[in-house]
Image (cartoon, rainbow, N blue to C red):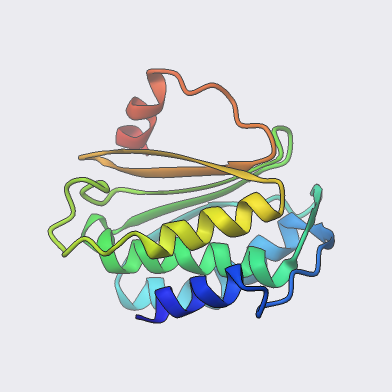
Amino acid sequence: MDDLLSYTLLTSGKHPFEPTSTDIGRLVRASVAAWYPAFEEKEIQLDVDLPTEETFYWEADPKWMTRVLDNLFQNILRHAAEGKYANIVVDVEQELIIVADRGPGMDNSPYEHGAGIGLSTLNYMLKKMKLKADFTSNENGTRVAIGRALPKVNPEVNTMITEM
């Protein structure tokens, strides 16, 4: 119900959209630091690649971007904790955020499937910020890449999920 309320508030303009030049490396580092205790509690190994010397900027709402990451991290805890692994990358060269896990995959989760409102909210927010998300999921995990222009998905991506 909370997801539906959030989606309704967002789409009706009740959560203001305030884009600004946002340091993506810094924002992702802060989000990972905030979520670290929750990952640690579930004994999820975090493999992070968050460059400190380099970054890139998106014209984005920092609160909305933090909420997007919160949604992805929460999904790992809810649906992929059994995989005990999360990979979070800021790819400065391609200007991407990549979040991956070794859970059962979106179609294979033993948990009840929701109405998809959380992902609808995520996609709505990204679209408003002129960003896109590419979801790759199979029985070996899920990988989400967020960026302005996403690279073409190739067959190696599914292999990458398995090898993480």
